[in-house]
Image 1 (cartoon, one colour):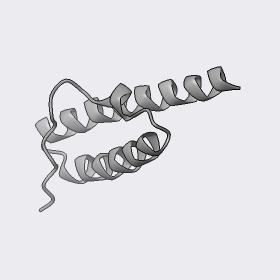
Image 2 (cartoon, rainbow, N blue to C red):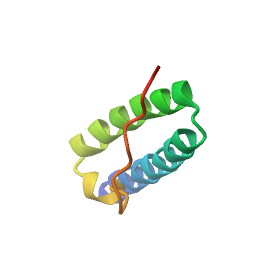
Image 3 (cartoon, one colour):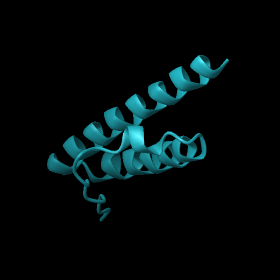
Length: 70
């Protein structure tokens, strides 16, 4: 049972990193609405991951800027 939880936590952490990468690209491409939506998804997943105790697995090595919506 514990390895299943660990696998889920690792998979969620991977998803957080993937969305963070997509958000950064959206910011660089000035796709503001997409970046904003990815930011919302990222925050929700980070909260869920933190509640599962795996938040250290998901942190990218650099802080990503928040998307600005015009």
